[in-house]
Length: 355
Image (cartoon, rainbow, N blue to C red):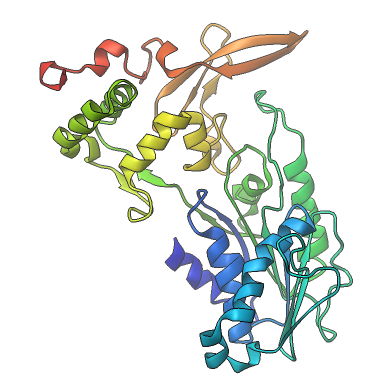
């Protein structure tokens, strides 16, 4: 992921501006690589003159800029290698302290870094007459929480997508625009930018923490159940069955988060959380891959398919006339159908796996 994105970022400052939508799991370096390292790189090599960093509020954007501010002020090695970065000034309105994050940073005769929120205007942002040539949106949609009704959304993602097109792509055609986030909810901003219909506008980079699941994934349900009863037995089970448990598994960043670590998170937080925050796979599907929207509205047996390929039953909760809300049942409550979550008896597998 980092290598591929670095190749994309090398385009910044060229005659062909980059329009990139990057979706990756939480904690996998999106902000560090983009809102921190990329900004320092563009300043060091003078790729950009006016950099605008946006988040859901200007204060949140200032928090993102704080680390860049500290690095520019305190990194003596950076100053030695790139002397033009040593002379800085801050704009008015902030002290750079924890209580007052920086809003504007000026690198003398080189560039301006500024922040903005989702309701701010970029019309007056310039540096020595130059408009923004790099716009980074990180956490631009504050809470992409939509109703969990099937295919009923609040429209925030659509509104922000139109706003970006009108206020940034159209107004600043020569600027590189990068949007980063985790695809946690259907029809969110990051989901809309990964709609296949947007491929002509956006370079789309999408990454999942688990690239492929083990062939014998059912064994992980046994491990998860043992883990809640007796962690030592769960560890013994893992040690004895490691080959079978991991056969076929492939993860995005094994040195950062192994498959075992991810399964621990999955057993702790549940499969819905895991599919959202590690797999970019909301429970009711998403625009990015409409083929993943596998569900049934049959009132006798409503279900969705999780990212690992297991059928998850839904329960119906009537609210108003003609309004039905679906809720996900707990794993232990699913009857065996399709590719079901193993029953407790099946989780014991055979005699050699019992304790």
